[in-house]
Image 1: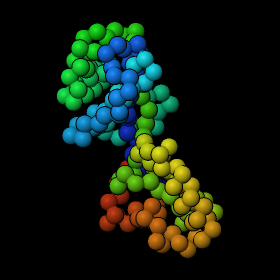
Image 2: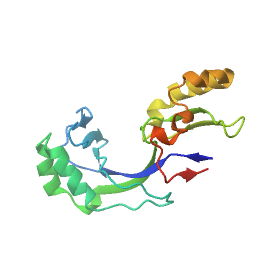
Image 3: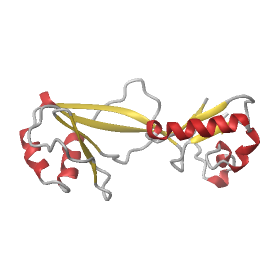
Image 4: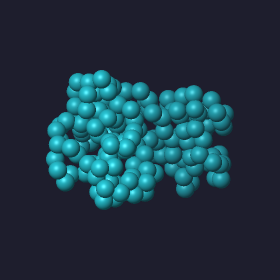
Length: 175
């Protein structure tokens, strides 16, 4: 069985012990660039979905130490106090990590029965939104297990990628 999935590296910067970050500020996202920040205990978490080519599955996803400067520049566009914060940062209070998001071509998850393997149900490809989507996905999956014929009406069925007309990529992850 082949599923059309991409693995995309995503990085996050956590700044520790950073004075000047408003403690009760809401999560802020620049809809034009995708850069975001939110307060964390004593600091902030920053991110940006920088476009990258899909990669292979990695046990340890490498980080790019130019990323923090880029994301700081992106969020300073929204909140100029970040320019001052950036000037005071040291490597000791910057924590950078990376992981991989599993994404489908339409950025919607695959939820439902696998036609190729009777009894196998799928719930994957959340593009980094798995925690937020899991309650609804669990409900949908339970409903589909109870009434498998309902998959024909399921907008998250993996059958939506069954034909090349659906935009399935040539490179696929085989499970």
